[in-house]
Length: 119
Image 1: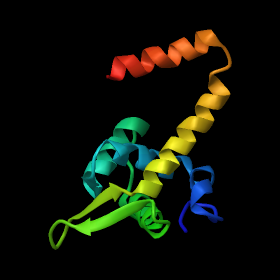
Image 2 (image 1 turned 45 degrees about the vertical axis):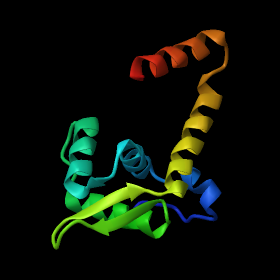
Image 3 (image 1 turned 180 degrees about the vertical axis):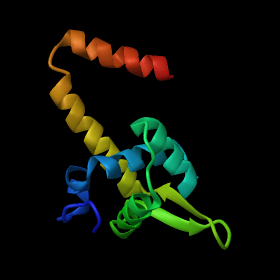
């Protein structure tokens, strides 16, 4: 695996992914995408170039873990889509983050306001 630690089981997959891999899953939670679209989203987030040698091995790792499904759009382009396990990994990560961040009513309201702004 390029950046991942070993995965003991799928339910704990979110805990063992690198931040880069978690960000790929979050991007794919929006909609299925081809590699270059994922690359553009990552570059926008990191505000720097993401090279192919980092992106595609991590996508392959996520496919191997069963968190992302890879399909061929044409001879040169693959599409990547979050699996149910991948979606659960994203939700597990959000749940853990919220359990650490939401410590009182004020912080709960901050999160609610963020969610409402996105709807």
